Image (cartoon, protein in one colour):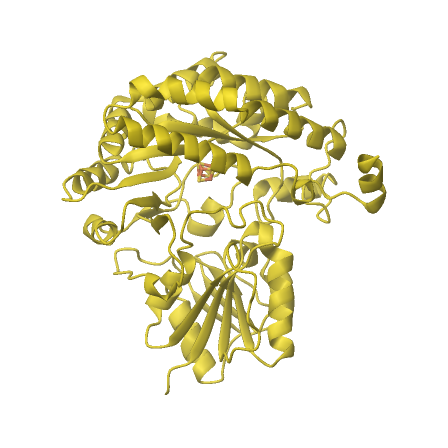
Length: 469
Ligand code: SF4
């Protein structure tokens, strides 16, 4: 068979705050192209490009859909199909709502794609595409529609060779992953559902070989880069191997503070910092102990269950900061046990801890236990981006609180105070790390710019004119 022209698109909403602001190379497209090589791939990253280039010839279009890009992805898929091009949807959103996605696609990939994509490409070449391609141990009932199913998660011990060269633009941060899966199973998160409750690790040598091709900065995409007891040894070996590379690079990642609560975890955090970790984005989720307990996120705070949970979270955060690692705290506010004051108290927590505040209103993601529960209890409105309708908090209150918190949290005074807090903690490369801290904070300010409020708050036309007055 001759090679196919395959267009891979990372979908993004036109008003996504990350547009023209996301420094990270999306890894999903290179992974797909690397799994089914020998074809003529074009990558389109809609966080940076505007034009989908419908007129370019394509035999197959694959669209990777994040949670915030569902409608845009469907628009694009519908237009390609109207022009007779075969479309496959995959990624987190279609995996959680495959029966919604299939209305806009010839096929939907459910779950991790490494072992599905080569089959999809082969079936598309042969003109016998099935409707669903599923990679997960759980049963999947396609109804009357055709399905190809693999009953296990991909074996990450097998070599994965992302084909990054198909990108036409240079990203500030390369991206790589080492571990997938999570046993914590917070009720708002889809990772356990999508990647399973057991950690799967790539060979350290494969990960490090990829890192050794990167320029200066990279993002380790794992969910908990300080590890859990089951992965401490793995991450220790990984960070030792990274530290032994000739070229020193700097990296960022999503981190977990529970590792700071035990000695073995603390050793991993120190090694991560030594290997070039500059910045950790930490899902702190809430400063409301009731909300932490209800969602299950308390399990990832390393804070026990006593009355001093918040103080113990503070201690764990401070340990990470003391290694010279800049910390942002990612919070979701607006659960049942929160009120509007929780926004302001969350900001005060960040201010006191010198944590960069990244505070969002709650959005229950489809397929999560939180979404299922709120739906059962009649508390959801999925036509709104902030789909949990809190009886005591209006969209206007949320917008006003976010505006206030973001203005305070990202004022130049606060940015400078935070930067000077880290200065004595940077053990080396002080000028570089200081500049990094300043640039990082200005970028994050843009990424959560609430003036793009329609991204956060879906207002009706009447609401909009009221707000404008
Ligand atoms: S939020 Fe983090 S700890 Fe909780 S399930 Fe998701 S990945 Fe695991």
